[in-house]
Length: 286
Length: 328
Image (cartoon, rainbow over all chains, first blue to last red; front, top):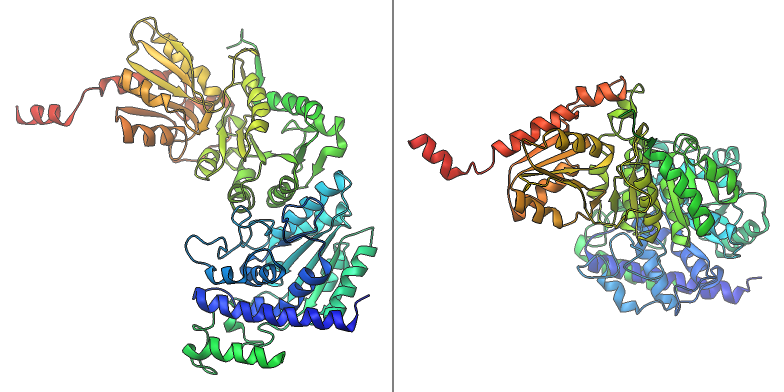
């Protein structure tokens, strides 16, 4: 059971992760902002409460696996990993730079702990399902988590994998969809409507849960419920606010693929964006 | 050909997979609704707990295999080459090749010799698709025995491997005991006179290359080399080309990007010599019987023999010679 104190600790971690995300993106001068901010609470919950992992031993065989399918939000994963102790937080400032282990989209052979190479959308759920199937063949007890975007629910490969995971009753697999309603070309329900997303996954024979993706307790409870479902895989549709924590970014799809310093300047001038956003985030958790 | 023992390369793969089932508990087989024709069926029957069915979903075939390999298994994925590595090329690129995981990609029904099914099912670009991806080793075995050995050898290769297979029965040229060394080209015929041309062949068309060399035995001494590993390409081909001074490449694939492309790239850098290419020339296949299609698309014995003569005729024709001719 999560104590109020523990929840508050995770929330502080989420705030710190958001600050690092802004700092690293501003330093990189390119990258995605809205998605990483929106998923900071879930990443904090995963790395500081849910995952069974050891930052000092990323290759530990019994660790839970976190497959990030939508690799473009990798800054939030890097930030969470750094805060969890996988590598020094300063290294986050090398994001997207030549020679860095922190590639623009994550690569398995570059940085221990990222588990797989991803970015091109639609291919993470299959990788996670394959991982979960291999683990079950060998009666391993670790769990496999797959984080996806809502945009990549457009991709056929996602549904091939959804069908496969249900057919194989991969209950060791928990998928999480970042339902933030935006993709590069606009809002999902205009670009390629996904609703009713819950019914789609139910029709594919998944156990479906929906939570507020900024409510640590609700998310952690959903993950616990997924562990108790042994006859099918579970998907948690996490409703999130893109850009969460920075009011000038929240809900604005124009912030999908640009960093602070290069974002829409109708609310904050470009050269002030990093500074203003960081100040805003700091007041939030003071 | 009728007096020779024949078997399809896919049958050699099927036998090897059964052997691997016995010897390597980490080997798993994944198939996209083509277990019989890719010859995974016997593995499926013998090791059902290590056989994974995908249905008609080749993109998922690649991504599931990536996950299994990432966990620690050695997955073989089989479909027709037009679908895998055709349809799922990006999934192979990102999740297998860039990810550098030991998935063994088996592309069946390669070449026009697939026959009556027609162009949609005749893969002519799979070698090109695979050899441009870093980390992938590319095998194109010449007969069922070699396909068996290549399959066994693929497990010893730490990264991803592509194995190209054909549908039709073709002559068995290699012996079970003859060695298969990854990345090592094999001289399978050498004239007793000093060779004046090298024929580099891959896949079952090696047989036609040998027939052509035999036919020309008294007119044009040749050396015939089996290139079962297209990548990494044995640098020995450069030395051979240098010593004979003219080359013919033979493959049942588009000339662009295939074995011919690979040989031309290597020779252009180190010893440019005349090269004639036998293969498909920027066209798709069509329905027909395998042998008539091989003839129609210019890959028959007579085509190879003509290419040999042409390569030799271009020898020594240098710019300086042309200048002399032009300026008298």
